Image 1 (tube, one colour):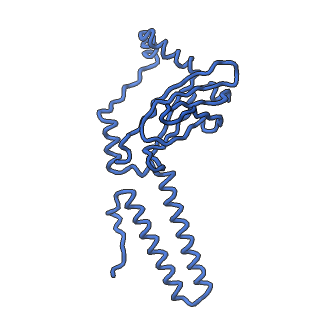
Image 2 (tube, rainbow, N blue to C red; image 1 turned 90 degrees about the vertical axis):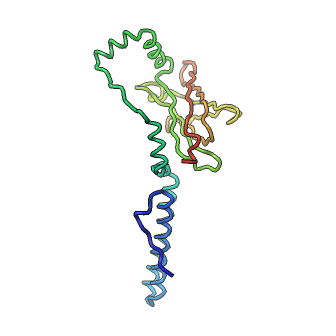
Length: 226
């Protein structure tokens, strides 16, 4: 029976990398244990056995990190690259105007620029943002983190928010999801199988009335097929 071997040039996907790690682990542990059986020195046998156990623990931890913390990075395969190409197809960034031109354009915009500034004021500079990754939960497509974002200074940076009530619709939850922990900017963590509209009622510690922010929580529904 021929010994298993690893051909680095054939490893082109994260799944193949994990398989290569397992093969390397089996080879290394096998060599250490075989050597331990042949050596008759007790203390050296103990060192080899301990080294085998440490290798297994290290490899297990690395695999765990790859499947959790660094899972999004594993999407950098041909399919995800192709997906990004489609998202940025014909991408051509608009050149930013000079300061003088910005003021002139703002005056020409008239009411629409006033409305844009009013949004900042009405929202107290608060907005909803979200981030997603491929879901680690069975039967779900994406893990999503939704949180507040403060434009410049305001109630979030000043610690003047008491809680945020997230509404994701009756198909997700019958009750609002209330976040009182200001850590991570009142972040809500969810897993979902499809995009949704999120409304967030922000309540303040002072006498100002609550405000409602909205965000369409979007991600590729065919993410699991990429």
